[in-house]
Length: 296
Image (tube, rainbow, N blue to C red; front, side, top):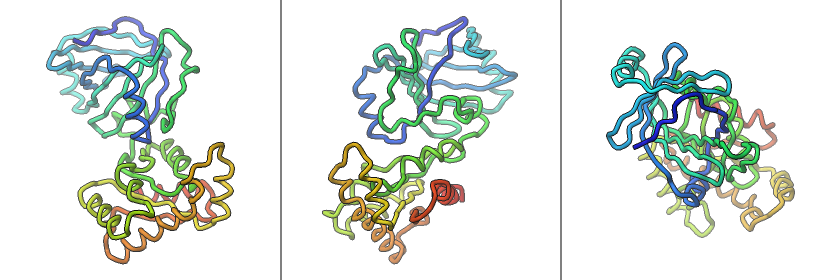
């Protein structure tokens, strides 16, 4: 049964949105899960009301946040139920708790009002400045859109877009900019779009896989391409480590373009696959083009 932490608690934490699913899975696989439970939250008159559901065993709290301290008191089921009925709105999520050395890692898998994953890091033992997030974690600490009270009000505008493209085309920085405005994107789909975007995979096989995915999933998929070979190669040359994929960035860039063209000509886009030409665009222009597609 979940053990409630009551009284005046330090609520200092850092928040991250993992945009690379494979890196999140690898990170969580390196730790032992301590506990897991379902949280239902609602808000009323400046208070946060919570129901903890640990395999059918329920506990309830009322929280009041003031600066870096949250005052937590246990309440009755009746009080929680009344407030939830009065507000008619809730956040529901699965919380998984891990330990990473001196750091407490809460992985919140949101179910309502939006599906998303957010990682919260806290510690009573070490400075949070010393925490080194894994690759693919984008920090949103201090961004009000990612406060639970704001998520409750609908601050997350979109969470169902996959950004694809060759190395150095600007995927990660585009996603980071979109996150600032409450638009959550995945940085590649390693088990689908990136998996089959290989020279060794025939075009017919690739587009068949993609179309099947588009038919059965609600995600929008955006291919970013940049036809300026010199610019792509310049960006690659600035990397500390250059992989074999990096060395063929322009060739992969062309493969994304050719795949999109083939699917467009054969009416296979399903209204969910888009291409953005980033050639000679500023970062702001690139982000706005992607944002326009997502928010249509």
